[in-house]
Image (cartoon, rainbow, N blue to C red; front, side, top):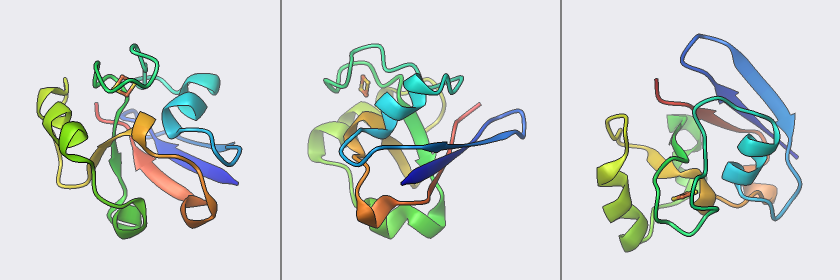
Length: 103
Ligand code: FES
């Protein structure tokens, strides 16, 4: 399975992501700049903020109430399809997902 990150500088990175891995873990493993994952995925840092490409937002689903609150404290402004990527777990339905890293 794979995911693609669009970086603020216009570059694109596509990488293999094992099923079950969060997209924050995958981003950190592939050194995607701007996705830090400071809290290790415990929903307390918001440094794993990504904007799900609108073509994938339905499959990505909705944030939980707590994630929703955390999305209000991200560094970059929240977008309609913003998510915390530690809460997105790679699975069949997300294979090929496109994420935008906020600048
Ligand atoms: S890694 Fe901290 S909120 Fe996602």
